[in-house]
Amino acid sequence: MSDLTPAAATPPAKPQPRITDCAAPYWQHAKDEKLVLPYCGQCDASFYYPRLWCPTCFNQDISWKQLSGKGTVYSYSVIYQSPLPSYQADLPYVLAIIELDEGPRMMANVLNCDVDKVRVDMAVEVLFETRGDMKIPQFQPA
Ligand SMILES: [Zn+2]
Image: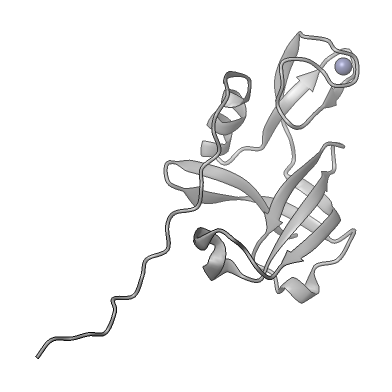
């Protein structure tokens, strides 16, 4: 007698970001669970996303600076449907724009929180989601 019950399907792994040369330090620090962003000394400001020049003054003498990892939800959406099988188990989940205390805004998921509890201006802090051999900066209620 054969068992015709289908095996529980293992969802495919979530996609990993493609690492560009100018973003490599960002991802390397994330592996160490540090939120480190490019910094422009002329503007005295960090910025996101990593790029070869400051988006405000076009200065190309960029350094890197660790941020507090604290911020607030600037805007968000609750995702109830995903075309990607690798995200089905997470539904519903929150995709948000986080305004870091130091100024830059970045897109991330808000984890470890009921989706109905997320609000604009809610205080959040960074955490790092392990994805393969990478760690992805995400946020949770502070
Ligand atoms: Zn600048």
